[in-house]
Length: 477
Image (cartoon, helix red, strand yellow):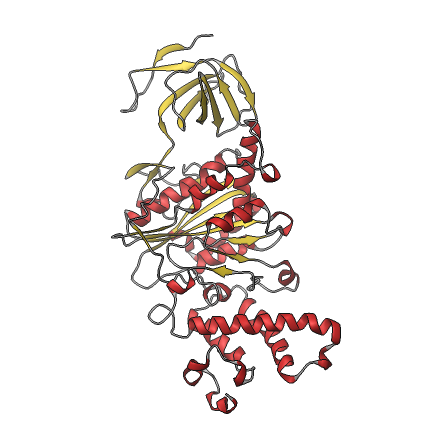
């Protein structure tokens, strides 16, 4: 059936006086609709779908092949009648309304308020794909973001403008850790700080947990909460991180705020990407994920950073679940290539009741040195982190030896390292739900190191007279 041209009931300034409604749907599969005989349609163009019952849905053009357009429907394709459903192309890309009043609001995955509050009067309407930061104008990440988590602040410091993912596993308390960081995170006094939280594919129970945590602690006042539930349309999940980052860029680069973006769970995002790719009948890559998943993830992660001449910054803390705890799975593997380090949660520590169960040895923050040191944290920060890492690694190795020869075969120094590893996990890592300042974290580190012989503290030698709890014991240096 040929498309019919009718007058639009309401026109946007960028649209023509006449628009074309198409009733040429040929094929529906999963979240996708195929439309024939289309003209003057662009990639990423937004679409309005009028159902036979007069209800409306929205979609976006995924692909153009000659006169065939592939459209992904955000609200799902259930109930679409290929003969009676009308498709209208809106001649604009996906956009979101932004304003400072977004702080404290709860939005759905596409940026529409769902908290029952007053309508948001937009200050601007921005393209959710954003604009890449010119490498020449990109400022080097710097300065310290205090999360209140010792294993992160002390050993794998989060720096403004950095992207530092958290690798979790099924059943591990990644959501609890995310909520704790959102409650506790702070920057230097006098600076405006905001958090944009994008939740993708979470359950109603998890959503209720986050809401209760934010409301009880008052953290919601500085949070923009994007909520995409597990029973929400899969395709909406693909828009959630892009909408969240657009708001973050607005707050950072237009309102000069320091913005921390927490995205959970990126595995759900990638599963949605795979579902759409399968519906398009694309040739799959590793584990069935599309071959362009690396490129797609980079368009999200690379939106973190700082710009020369701007006070604000966008810092990312994406959280992803490793299927079967496999760190070589395509999702954590590709994420590790793009981002600047990783925080890894341990199932072994979780089973022992240690919270947060952060396994510090495989963790890494490649930009840590840019955000620590005298004037930012403390002059001994790097040395303390190095010494704690070395001592804990030695204690972990000795545990394997004890399983073979027994503890009686160890020297007194080796026994001290064994006790150090236990104390490190219980005091530094297992801090519970209470937040700590960086000074408290470093002091606990010095208290733990005081249980080792002075001659073993080679990496903090220059700071012993100033910070060691018992500096008079340095006779055996």
